[in-house]
Image (cartoon, rainbow, N blue to C red; front, side):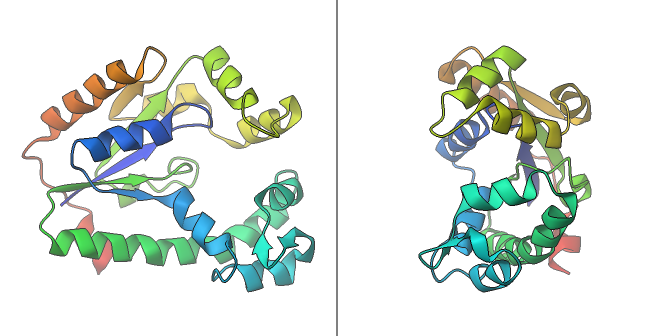
Length: 206
């Protein structure tokens, strides 16, 4: 089973691109959705994160905005958070892989925002980067609710430069034209990957 790593900086259209892969019948593991589940009331991350950052807990769940305000400017706090959340998300990802391997799928997409920042390219067979010009990215992000220029800059500066991501990519999806155009690019990528065997899964599943 081929593991396709899908990534891209904030505002690049990665989530929409993931949906396009799904429309082509490729299962998608959504790392961000997994974190949402871990942060929700009753989620596995609530207690350990609350022990470290009690001010981030609201009504029994982790408030992502409050948590982001704590960790975005504090590398030590960010590393402590990652030490809690990354292993939990990793277990969910392995469960996803086992399910679709057993179902006989030839390929899956792992939608991981920080795939390149965390140096995890050895955990996928192929890297697809979703990209767009900076002004398009900036406009998309600032149009989001509760987003400010300062917060955008904080997030932007934590992520690997788009130019570098493009250099590390096996394939690039330019999301700046239209959804239909991005869909065409996704279909072209899948056509190029037809018949290609994955080599990473055996190591991932032990």
